[in-house]
Structure formats: C-alpha cells, structure tokens
Image (cartoon, rainbow, N blue to C red; front, side, top):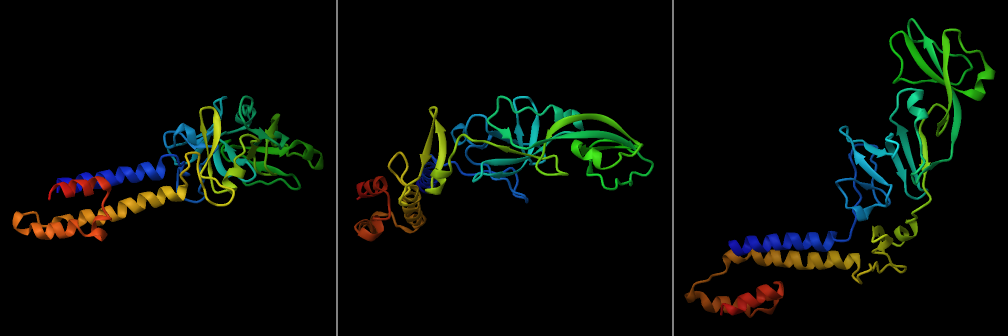
Amino acid sequence: MKTKKILVLFLFFLFEYISGKDLCIPKSCSFIEPIVLVQFPFRLLEQQPSSCGFPGFDLLCNEKNQTILKLPSSRSFIVKHISYATQEIDVDPDFCGPEGLARIKLTGTPFENNLSEDYTFYNCSSTNGRFTFNNLPMFHLLCSGSVNHSVYAMETLSISYGNVPDRCKKITTISVPVRHYGSVRSVLNWNEPFCETCKFRGGTCEFKDGEITCIGSSTFGSSTDAGGISRGAKYGLSIGISVPTLIFVIGLPGLPSSPSQKPYWEKVVNCPNMMALAPYAFRTTSLNRK
C-alpha cells in the first residue's frame, strides 16, 4: 500500500513537471462573461510566473474578480477585452468625474491611446433627474452627482449645435480617451512585443533572461521548443508513462506475495506485456524480489 501511494505521488508530480514546466497557460479572473483571457505579453500577478509576461504588462484581480490594469501613475483600469491579434486592450477607467479622467497618464507605459477628444463637463441641477437634452450629444456620468444634481459630459465641438440648458453649469473642459461617442472608454494599443507569428505557428511566447522565446512553435507543425521536445511529445510522454503505470499500480493488491505463490509472481514478472507497462525503476525492483 505504501508503494502504491509513493507511485501515485510520483506520477502526479511527473505529469505536472512534463506538461507544465515551460507552458504558460492562459488565466482568467472570472469565468463569467465577458471572460478576459490573460496570456503573453500580459500575466496575472500571483497566478502566473514572471516569464509568462513582458515587463509593464502585469494585471491583477480585484475583490470583484475583475481584471485590473494598474499604471505607474497609480491609475487603475478595468479590463473589458484584450485583442491579441490587433494588440489592443479595451479598458474602462476606474474614475468618477472629470478629475479622474484628467489624471490618466500613459507616460512610462508600453501603451498608447490613438483616440482622444475634448469634452466639456457640466453640473446640471434637476428636481426629478429625468430631463433630457434635445439635439445635444451629452451623456450622463452615473457615478457622479447626487439626488439634486447630475454630471454630464458633452463633446466640446458639438456645443455649437445647440443650447446648453440654463440649469447646467460648466465644470471644466479636458481631453479624454474615448472609443466612440457616449463611451468614455479607452482602447489602448501596444506595438511591442509582437508574438502573433509565434502563436500562428502553434507556440507561446515567454520572457526569460531579457529575451522573448517562442516555446512550442514550428513552421511545419512539429511544434518543437527550444529544448528539442515538442509540446505534443511532452503530453504524450506524460500520458504514456502515467496511464500504464497507474493500471499496474491498481493491480498490485491482487498480486500474491507469499512463497507458496511464487510461481505465479514469476509468471507475472516474466510476462513482457505486463512488465512493459511499468517504469524501468519499478521493473528492476520487482525482478530483485525473485
């Protein structure tokens, strides 16, 4: 029984070592839609090793299981989607009001924002909070305001197309990152590193010793990594060792061990089909019992 437990533990760690040693498996903070898969150049802190990501692309999970991008300026972004093909990350600034938007700085980061517009913010008093603006492209910042007033933002260039209601007082005008009208959401782009060629060949990128390495890639589908062992070979090796050995171990309790039954044990040992299933070390131990 003790031998069986040792072998099971050995097989478990062997499978973990072979199948996961150099593989950076995509992770996610939550499996509720929309799912944000995190893989190179990004990595989830405390869930993926540093080699799975590129410097400056660290993400983390908050208490709500949301994926968060935190910039050096201490600004936090809620990640909505990552497009690895176009190298874009769709983020929603964790802000409330124009003050938060004004503090968004991308200096010192690998990201850039290709679209920004000037928006003017207004504090609009209201008795019922249900008023609308005719012919004015204004959107409501739900996270701002109170029962007696609401904060709205309007594209500055659109102000000339209509009259701002008298109940609205201008707060400020700032340039903000946008994706499209009505969505103060930013699509950040990155140019480096580029890993799509590696992934197209079936591999994954890793960052080790200051260099980007393509693991498991091959032009013609043989998926060979830098160590000369293909990813498929790793899995095949782990399964080829684990499954037969488990079958052998499960059958151990039924094998007689008393001297009177020694001929049967010798028959099992000398059976090439049975002993071929066992690892070399175990075959050696078994033969020494004869």
